[in-house]
Structures are given as C-alpha cells and as structure tokens.
Image (tube, rainbow, N blue to C red):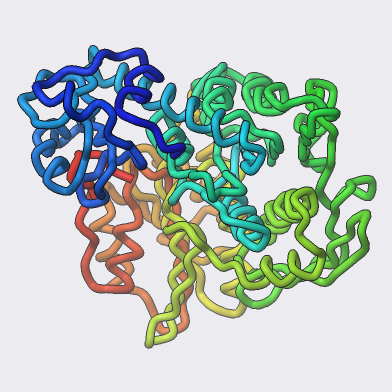
Length: 487
C-alpha cells in the first residue's frame, strides 16, 4: 500500500483513533494491511473480522506481538496500539475499501501504476494468472492469490500494491447489479477485459442479458481513449462485442472471429488437451503452444495476449510466457498422473454450465483411448435454470462418450437422470449422497489407465475426491486462517 501514518489511515476511512496509546502512536507508519496474524509484520494494520468459525478480535494480541501498529475492528479492545473501531463487520469491509481506494489513487497519481481489470462469467482466474505472468515480464506486478475478487479479497489485493508496483491485475466478480461498478471504484482500471457472458450466477441476475449488463459495468468505468482507456472485448461473444458501444475507451477485440484484432488461427490440441495456435496481431504473427489444458484456454490466452501488447510486451515474449504458464491457482484443471497410470483432473474450484462443458470436452481429449470418469457436483446459483442446466450436462456426458458418471449430492439428481434418459444407461451413471461414496466407488472400480475429472461449484468441496485419489485421504476442510477467513 501507499505508506501512510495511522492518522492518515483514520482520516481515509473516517474513523476516530481510540485506545490508550493513540496519542503516542498515531503517527506510526502503516505499510501493509493483514487479516491473517500469520502474515502480520512490523508496520501492519491488523483487520479484525468476525468469521464463521472464529473471531479475529481474539487474535489482536498476537497481531500486536507480531508488529501490528494499529487495529481496525468492530469491538472495544484494551490494546496498546491505536484502535480504529467501526460499527460492524460490513463497516470493516467498507473501511477497507475506502483505504484501498485512497492508496490506489495515490499510487496512480504518481504515474507508475496501471490497473488491469478482468470480468466474465467463466475463465476470470485462469486469465488473471496469464495476464499476471505477462505483466511480470514488463514490470513489478501484483495480482490476487486464487480468486480474491470479493468485498474482502479485492481491496486486500489493491492494498498489496506499493510505490514499486507497475501493474495491478484484478478480478471483478459480480453477484448482482452494481457489484462490478462498486469494485471498479476501489481501483479504477485503465485496461478492462471482458471474457464472456454466460449463465454463472444467473439466479442472482434473472437473465443472461442481466448478466451482460453487470459485466458491462467494467467497460463503462474505463477512462476515455484520450486518457489511455482500453476495453478488450471477446469478438466471439455477441453480448461482449456489443459492449463496444458502452465505453469511452479504445476497443481492442480478441477471438477466433476473422475480424478480431488479436486472434487465433490453426488451433490444435495435444493429448493433454493443451492447445497450440498461431497468434495473429496487428504487430505480426507468432506460434503459441499453451501449457494449460482445455481448448477454452485459447480465448483466455488471446485476452491475455491483447493485454500484453497494450503494456509493451513483445510478441516473442508473449509466446514464451504463455507457453511456460501452467495453472497458477489451485484446483483448476490440475492434471496429475498416478504411479498406476490413472490420471486425475482436479477442476473442483468452481463450476457453471459453460465451464462444465469445457472441462468435459477436455476430459474426452485427454482420455482418448482410455476409460473416462466424470465425478460431478452441483453448479450453484443458477436459479430457475438449474434443473434444465444439470439435465443438459448429464446428457452431454453421454453424447461425448464418457464411460462413467458419478453425480455427487442432492443438487445433481437431475444431472444423473438426464444421463440415464439420454443413453438409457444401466450402471454407467451413479448418484451418491456425498464425496465419500464417490471415493469408495472409484476405489473399487478404477483401473490403471483410467482418467477421472472432478468438477463442481466450490461449496460442494469435491476437491476432497481428487485429494483422496492422489493422497489416500482428504484435506482438512476449510483451510481457515487465524482470523477465520477461508480462501
């Protein structure tokens, strides 16, 4: 973050300084913000949040012992450092956003920081990882770990940027109208990328057109072309392409469409579903071989390449970085071969209809000539289309020729029935109540050389199936940090 005194932090968030030590220490320098005591270092502002399992206020003493110079929280505390107290947990998050906005504005005003925002129904985190790798080739880069794209993770990531940071790469997730616009105000992007408009979270928007409107909030937040604003839009998605009329920024398009500014030609796939293609740009052409699996990654790579060109990365460096960038965030098309020849594809971090279809198609390619298993859980937040969407995925499993399906949980009974009705399967599809039953079936029936895809929305926790297949036991659930916040 931009270095501030405790007094300046209090002024930025509009909160008085409390505590017995405030007079002596309100000019202490704040150089970082942390909500996990394990990451606190001297000069930190410790943010005490009330989590589902533990209360961050219980860890304030540990944070102060580790070097925290002030605490932001929502409870009265008897501590030896200044306390910035607000009304409740929501107010803590709002204060964090205000502090992040103040820091981002100061860093941008210095002329060194370029903020790059990414939104879309699918592929945000994979694209963020690729863009971050390309930006790192051009200068010091900050990007969120995993998919820190909500009211906590977004400002926290912004506050990791310092005077030395040249590029700040951010995901902007939408759970309702106005959410992308709200996040964009924290750190206004100069470059905005819209990947696609699908049905993820449609239950909270009401329609795909509603989702498109929410995603367009990113390009509406960009500065005008004369001020350096750039909107990077997917030419293969008509709803995204139409956003060109909603922005003042200069528009750059990407895709396989012949008219796209940055496009892929001659697309191929290898045995691990890793795509190769010729990258065509206004600056010339270069061959690219991706290190990530799934032909859907071509679109993500093109979006990243378009950003790379805008920030001055050469074509050759773009090809080299894309070719060397494997999955950087966990549980996203992680492919592991066991000693017995079984291949496990752990794509259990998230799921929506578009991403599910892409993963199943990758399974088909990776498992060519082998027996293929799809272990699938619920796609959450689909609202009224949930039943039809799960039925469609079940039928697609059959149409793609995938040999075995295990549908896990009450939310995917329709997926199981869709598969049965499509193919009149007798035993090829099984519906089980929980992940332990899936592991039992796999343990009894997997053969050397089989390929297993594990995919569901994050809340289902199907990563435990992949972990059990690879390590013999599931990971501890939650992975909560000491402030009660889970990634």
